[in-house]
Every structure is written in structure tokens, then in C-alpha cells.
Length: 193
Image 1 (tube, rainbow, N blue to C red):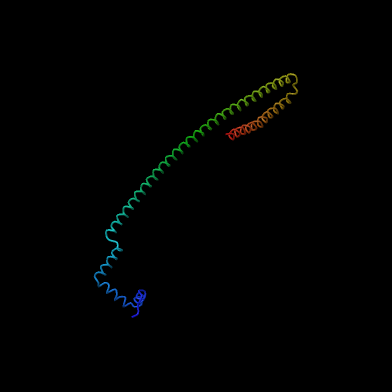
Image 2 (image 1 turned 45 degrees about the horizontal axis):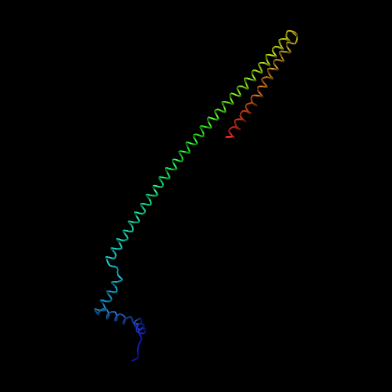
């Protein structure tokens, strides 16, 4: 009888399904072989204890993860509250600083306007005094002329009307000029700030 190799035996079993089933039945029917197969299968199968320990380990990991997440969230919440409080105090400090600056500017503007008002009032009073003085001198001259020349009275009356008109014209032209100079000075003061 010719000798057959193990590989040839395996090839024969692969080719013949019926022979393969028969070999399996023979192997399972032998108690020692069956026990060896069961033990080998059991080594690969997870036991109930294995599943329980895996479940407990997973549950423990989940709880640890939950606790760590909770701690992280609490730390983040505290950090947010701290940032919120710091931002709020910064805003309040800025608000007080801006309010102080506005009050300071308001006071400076008020004092500048008051000084300008006094200066304008002084200039107007000075002009008024000069005009009164000029008018007084003019009245004196006119009175002297009335005494010396009666015929020139009508001419002098017209001259007074003209002088009055020119005085009003002078005031009419100089007051807007003074106002625009004052406005320009105020604008320069405001820009300098």
C-alpha cells in the first residue's frame, strides 16, 4: 500500500463533504476527544464572570469619566464666572473713568465759555463806551456848529442820521465777525482736547 501524506488526507476530506461529517461524528462520539474539544471551545468563550467583570469595569470607567467631566464642567463654570466678574468690574471701571472724563470736559467747557462770555461782554461794553464817547464828542461839535451856523442844521441832522446808520452798520458787521471769531476759538479749544 502506498504511503499517503497528511496534506493529501486533508485534501481528501476537503473534497468529500460526507466523509468530513462522518469524521466529525466519530470524533464527537469519543468521550476524551469530545472533552478536549469542549475544553478548547470553553477557553475561547467568555464566561458569565468575565462579562460581569467587564460590565463592572466599564461601569467604573463610565463613572470615572462622568466625574471627570463633571469636575471639568464645574472648573469651566467657575472660570467663566470669574471672567464674567472681572469683565463686569472692568466695564464698571471704564464707565466711571469715562463719566469722570466727561464731567471734567463739561467743567472745562463751561469755564471756557464763561471766560469767553465775559471777554465778549467786556469788548461790547468797551465798544459801547467808545461809541458813547464818540457820540458825545459828535454831539458837542454839532451843538457848537448849531450856535455858529443856523443854516447848516438840516445838513447836520442828515449827518447824524448817516452816522447813526453807519454805527448800526458798524455793529451789524462787527458783531457777526466777533461771533464767528468766538465760534472759531471755541472750535479750536474743542479740537485741542
